Image 1: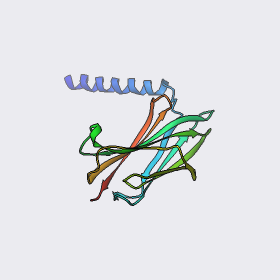
Image 2: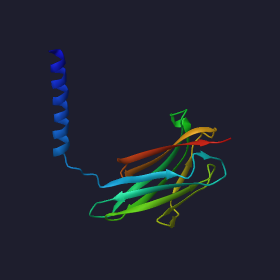
Image 3: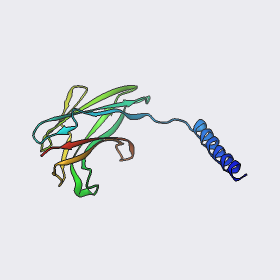
Image 4: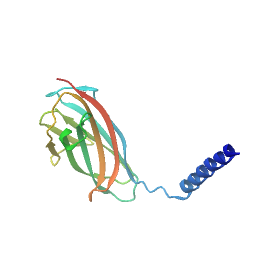
Length: 159
């Protein structure tokens, strides 16, 4: 009998979740459609390419902020941050845009949106420069800082 009640509760929870999903509107207008890097193993001084495809289905263009963050897997604290690149992006109406980033894992980052170079990207260096595994994250947020989406890949910085 306990088993039947347990299964009935699980079924009720599942039905409730299905009903909530069916009645809640999907209001996602902007997202990261894809995030990829050129290599799994990277080295200092050699530019590594990253591509972020941003999608926007809204009726009007939208300003957002794209941040690429390089952070040590071993140290999730602020001390484990290697670098971050941040730039404002204008998301066009019902289109996607591709942001290309070339970072040399030292001090140079170059960005372009749909092939047009950007001058206003800000590169901030952190304190972590040790070889090893790194999370590289692409985060899209509104201009007021509200998170929209984040995607992460893993790379290894060689010696």
